[in-house]
Each structure stands twice: as C-alpha cells, then as structure tokens.
Image (cartoon, rainbow, N blue to C red):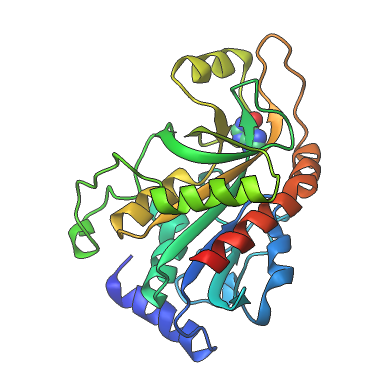
Length: 271
Ligand code: HPA
C-alpha cells in the first residue's frame, strides 16, 4: 500500500460521485440491509475499485455504496474482507483508509459474534467497549507506516466515548436491550473448540468474532472516532456446545438486524 494507490482509489470513487462523505459504515455478515435505507445511492463494486482487494465470500455482495442516511452523507461497505479469506492485515483494512481519505469523520462497524459471556443470548446486540487482538498480527506492522500516522498507537480508549454514549441513550429510548463488553478477534474460519471458549472467557472476552479489531486499530491510527456493535449469533457454552451452522448465524443476524439498523440510523442523525 502506498499513498499514491490510496489517492488513485479515492480519485476513482470521487469521479463516480463519492463526494465528501461524513460517516463510514462497515456491515457485517448477515447485516447488509442498512443499504436499503440509503437515499440517492451510488454503487461501486469492489472489483472495479482500483487497489481494492477482491471480494470472495459468496454471502458478501462486495460493494461500496455512497448516499444519504438521515440527511448525512455516508459511505457503506456491504461486505468486508477477512483474514480467513487469505487476505493480509493491510488488505482487510485498506477500505478503512480509503474511506478516511474520502473524508469520513466517524466510523461505524457491525459484526456477527459468538457469546462467551453466557448472559448474552442469540439475537442480543453488544456494544464494544474494548477488545483483545488474538489474530496474531497488526495492520500497523509494515514498512513506511509513519507515512500514514504514528507507529505506536495508543489503545487506552479505542472506542469513541461520545458515540458509545449516544448509542446507549438511543437504545434506552428505543427500548432496545444493549449488552456491553469485550470483543476478541480470532482468525477463523473454523469456530472455537470447547477448550478455546473456556480460554476466551478466562482472558476476559464477552464475545468472539473474526473481524473488526484490525479495522478499529486502523481507525485509531487515523484518529478516526469509531464505534462497533456485535450481533450475538451463537452461544459459546463449553459445557453445552452445540455445533454451529453458518446459515444459522446468518439467519440470527438477519433477525436482529432491524434493531441494529434503528441504532445506526438514530446515531447517524445525531452525529
Ligand atoms: N466464533 C467466531 N466467530 C463468530 C462466531 C463464533 O462463535 N459467531 C459468529 N462469528
């Protein structure tokens, strides 16, 4: 990744009309319907955007969509890139850098996750308060990182406090129950063993997933305020572990999706 590549990416997007978006949004597995709320949409397929990685996983449609939600200019990633698809840390976070280069001032992230904290049930939403990176690498470990920001990025408060408070208040007003907790990222794509679920609980995680953390690290690198919400799609109870089915994960995500859409829309309105 070079600055010139990023500029070529954004020049292409601007030529399509992606002008001055205020908010960037990443939609997780089974959580693509927010795009139906975008007014005056302009669509760019990932495989047409210069220097974007290519989308591979079939249930991601792989599009960047620009338009308006609640009167705010947004750019939405429908489908993200994962390490388990064979991409590296630089690839999977490239779209975050591109959206930042386009001018976004805030970033909202969603994902599907399994619960480690067994008070958190399928279909619950969990606001991320902190995270643990178990993906064995960093999106900032590359030559020339200082061209893009400082190398030793503070992570004492990775999730923006103001956005979190707005989300918490909105959830109360809308009667949406909202859990809060620590998200741990793993590479996947295999799910966790019983022993791994036990371990993740011991180290302090409330939910586990295969994304988000690299994007949040890069947002912090760019000093871009970020908030993230998990939809709990399965429960990682080591003493009672049921086989996890990806179609079931997608189905549960879809069922909980309207709550997430409400929270995101109300938050965007208040940003
Ligand atoms: N583990 C890891 N990733 C996941 C899970 C899980 O249980 N559920 C959804 N994504």
